[in-house]
Amino acid sequence: MSKSGPLLRLEGIVKRFGAVIALNNVDFHVNYGEVVGLVGDNGAGKSTLAKIIVGYYKPDKGRIIFEGREVKFKSPADARRLGIEIVYQDMALVPYLSVYRNLFLNRELTKKIGFIRILDKKKMRELTSKLLADIGIKRRDPDISVGLLSGGERQSIAIARAVHFGAKLVILDEPTSALSIRESERVLEYVLELKKRGISSIVISHNIYHVYSVSDRIVVLDRGVKVLDVPRDVATPEEIIDVIAHRKSPKEIQARVS
Image 1 (cartoon, one colour):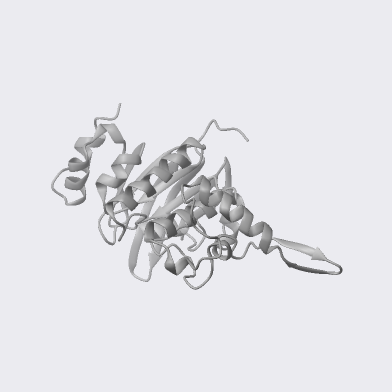
Image 2 (image 1 turned 180 degrees about the horizontal axis):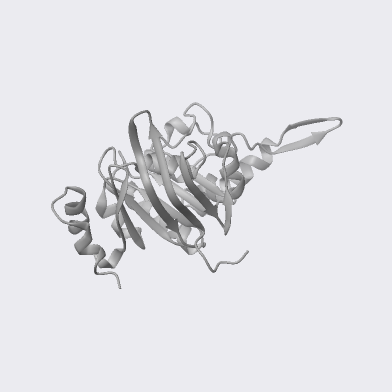
């Protein structure tokens, strides 16, 4: 697959909910191996855009191009098959299930015994232990209930699940929300690890400093409109905050991009 263009490109995306225009003619792209910080105030359209990318919503207008070809998702399963994964704020894990059952949820490994297929629990446990070690969790039993893990550990498991199943683009929706300082730092390290592996990411967060620390580029939405799209080094975190708070014109910052 040629990597001469963006991994993902959205053109003229419009999404309405009744009389409310959640996204208004939004252009957006993510390059191969790039981390894009998607920020904005409540109601800006960040989560709506993410849900369109993963096939949860269908745009009313516009095109989605992934790896150079136009795609139309009927469901999140379509996006997942192409390698687009999302880690939601609640991490979409089942607290009462074990770590290994969560990691392979809806993608369970099986083995054939006679004429029937059963779950290959041994293999799933072994792979889970290896994956946990790879992401820095070395003393966790794969049979432990996810509900007993810390928020940072649960977040890391959700990210590991996406990587294990061949994600090319991972969307993280408020990944450091409700986490301790150390856990937040660890999750942000995972984002940088994704980049090292050539996996693109979109990081959605209200914490501009967290987004800024890992992003290559910052995109600001304001009431469904993209008002800023610049390399990280073009603006300071404080300037990004001022744009979101309508204290600074985004045009002034955008003009710095040559």
